[in-house]
Amino acid sequence: MNLEFEIKNDKLIATIIGELDHHSSDEIRNRIDDRIDRGGYKKVILDFSNVTFMDSSGIGVIIGRYKKLKLLNSNLCIANVNKSIKKVFELSGIFKIIEVYSSLKEAVESL
Image (cartoon, rainbow, N blue to C red; front, side):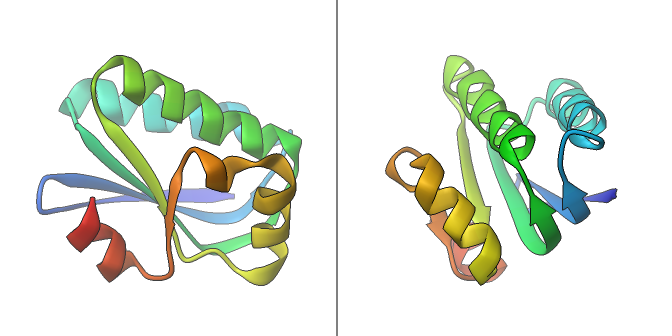
């Protein structure tokens, strides 16, 4: 698991690389929270283009970041979800509360 950050148009883009599971969820949660807190970002995009596997711990990371940002009157969205991860999102109901975009470009323009 790796995590890369980029800033585009005042939006924090967090690109998750590898597996988002119970082994990596704490580190990903802490690193994203730290970056949000230090930078004061109001718009965060989670880029899933390089996520190879995700379990319920990953859902917890996403929902937790969504709730944290909502309390700060900020927004979170997700971009570049592959078919296997999309199935996990559908089963969890994430699509009902978090906006998902097919590309990073679309997410940056829309958020």
